[in-house]
Image 1 (tube, helix red, strand yellow):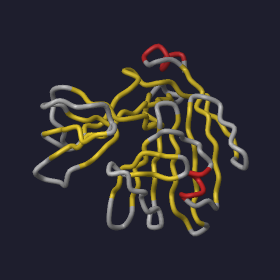
Image 2 (cartoon, one colour):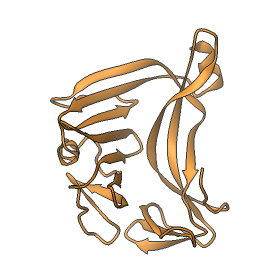
Image 3 (cartoon, helix red, strand yellow):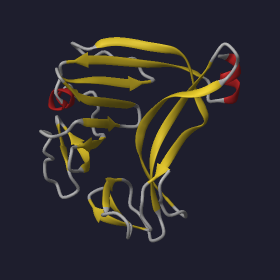
Image 4 (cartoon, one colour):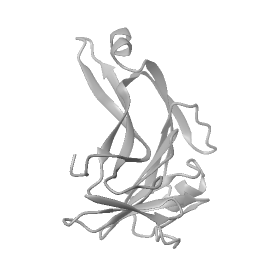
Length: 198
């Protein structure tokens, strides 16, 4: 790990908390992530919401329907909650560099990782035009896909929106280094490049 640490952001401990047999609504009500962002996947849509208490709201302030969600990633700068539907309601895992104590959840940790070089990386959202739409939300426009509303700081003409991630690396017995984990941590408005696929 010393070799990885020298190239990356230093060794860290990743703490986890897991629970099975839990619905997405129950996972949110555990308030693992407070004041965060939710990416919610259903068979017919992909929604972005702000976490408000134990639910999620859209850019227009409406509560998002969670009944058809089969996959969710909910995050703030310090923690990410992942939930996936299963035969037993679903399973959830929280991931953070800070120790996690969530009643009824099984704790764990991983000590063999380091932050990747560059620490926070990201994925550009589709859109050639980004505009503020009020109350901490921006809309990313593209001629190829419908507009995407995301909670982010105010934008200016020519800005793009990036989904920020922290990548963690580990090395094997031969010294090969690979990304072993990625934690979502927020959206950033940045100048310059327009978004495409990454």
